[in-house]
Image 1 (cartoon, one colour):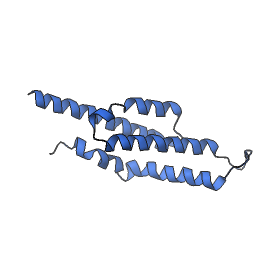
Image 2 (cartoon, helix red, strand yellow):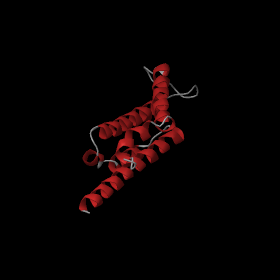
Image 3 (cartoon, rainbow, N blue to C red):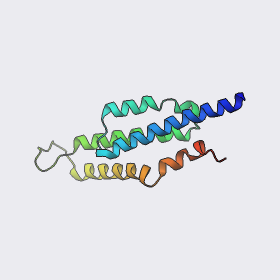
Length: 126
């Protein structure tokens, strides 16, 4: 009985992390401009992952965080034709970075990458 309770509790904790990841990805996909407060909330709400998953999930969460930061940075640097251009501004480099990160985030939900990452931990059919 205790083992079953432990497994159920572990499943619920893992499911919460998965739900936080999906919610964060949806927020990023909304406008591809993640706010610092959203990044901080994501890190806080998924911090438990280090203790309830194998190392692959914390590594994936770290990748999500770093890519969101890269997207935010590129979005902040981006200048359109009506804005003054700072010295050393490389429009192509910034646009390419934004595009790469936007495609990666789109694939996480659209192509099911996130679901696949978590599947072995949340599949109750086993």
